[in-house]
Image (cartoon, rainbow, N blue to C red; front, side, top):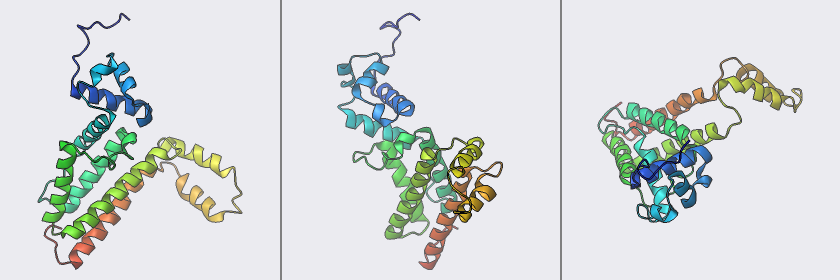
Length: 227
């Protein structure tokens, strides 16, 4: 393949730099993202990158904002449970596309416009539903803990889809006696190893419990406007 010429190479921009950074992190994890790897991916000199981003921190802020831009915004004033369910499902999908973001999205202290818009919409939806400011904080923290925690489990479990569950479970069971761990054996055989088991299907069950618990708390506080 002939080398790309300056004429065929896209003109560098902040958006192009950040898209390349996301691609690097998606392919090799956040540890693979450096200013040098970014320059190599863009076929540019490292110093040219600094015309568009000041440093790696700005790159991290930018790619986190890209992730937030991919999450569907809840509609302020809509049915809050439906909106939070849609937002949670979209956030989980974004984390599955970008697993490196799971431990990064809540660490940045210079949020971009998509991040701010996202947070404002979530808070606004909960406030319009009748949550107090304090209860909004509780609800936001609880939902994010569940969504990000589930996404982390999905990203780190030693299975890759339903088709690999039985193989991995059998390998693990070979290492212990079912008589020594009868409850674990029963759980594995009667549930985990059944055809079609998908850990990801547990997401909606847990999310329903979270939202139902928040709804009860809202009703007890006498603030429900949308149910």
